[in-house]
Length: 178
Image (cartoon, rainbow, N blue to C red):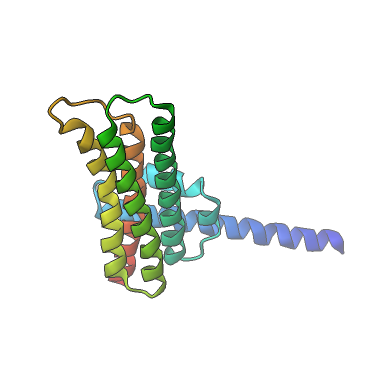
């Protein structure tokens, strides 16, 4: 009898994971078809690596998971800036301070967007997420648009962050079209 119970539980768990994986792949495919900047493989990989995405049962659930994923990445970048400040390794302080401020504002915008998605105000959520998506590019330009350009220590991470924020924007736009 216990064996039968375990077997049923196993198949229910397997079905749940398969459904979430299908939701992730289908949603990423639709999003990539509507936005040429969104990379399907990146979308799928970043969501499948996120435990919260694996339990999502709807597109809205994926919006929450992908937004929280972007908040986590932005927080990580903010930590990198703090570390560079503490180590006093970088010759130019101003761009670092600007990036720190940009990341802080991006985190605030992404967190606010979660509240607006909960209330189904998708246009405002998209606007807030778009503001956060500007942070990586703006941070990069603080290093390159100087009289004496310097290399940003965050170029690769900023590119990843840009694409991570693009995912919940695309998903939220899909919700807004329903």
